[in-house]
Every structure is written in C-alpha cells, then in structure tokens.
Length: 135
Image 1 (cartoon, helix red, strand yellow):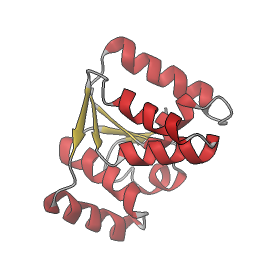
Image 2 (tube, helix red, strand yellow):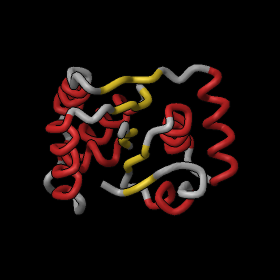
Image 3 (cartoon, one colour):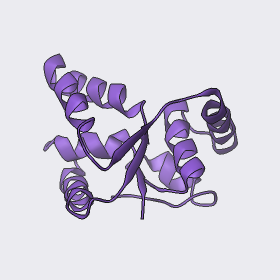
Image 4 (cartoon, one colour):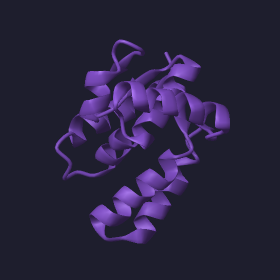
C-alpha cells in the first residue's frame, strides 16, 4: 500500500488542539512504524508551514516542521509540472474541488495511491474516481 497524505492530516497529527489530532497522530505513527511509502505533491511543504505558522503564531515552527518532513525516508515529493497540473485542472472542475485539493487528488490518481485526508469535500466527491479515506 502506498498513500498520498493531505496536508490536513499532517497538520492535525502535529497539533494537539485539532479535533482529529488523536486519529491523525495514530495514523501517522502507523505509517512511520510500517515504513509505508508516501507520495505527496511538493505543495504539501508550504501548506503545512503556513498552517502551523498561522495557527500557532510561530513562523519558525512552520518552517521547522516542513524541513523535518523532508527528512522522512519513505516520502517522495512530486513536482507540479504541466502534465500533473492538467490532471488537477480536470479533477478540480469535474469534482468541484479547490485547486490545492485537486493537486493531491491528481497525485493519487497518477501514482495509484490511496488519498488520506480530513477534507470533507475530498472524502465526499472523490470515491468514484480513486481510493480516499480519513486517517
């Protein structure tokens, strides 16, 4: 099994005040312990950095978390090239998703991974085209 993990899960796992913290943290620990391959768009780095810096008011914490994510040995970052952007355009339009959410879905579609997310729209709108679930 290979997974694409939405930024919402990373942020929730890191932030104890998030409502889904426990389930996200348990999921991330399981992925780490089992060395489950992770394929994510490189977009995850600024999304995580921004969410943590804004949510906790500590820019240095957001940057540090993004830098730590780069060190995970079982993670592969995918650049957003024109081909992947075209796929994200289709996914965004056909499934009425926000642009960044469509990028995660496009990565999952391209690489045949399971999308793990806390985003309600992804969970509701994508099951007919790819494997998607909450952590």
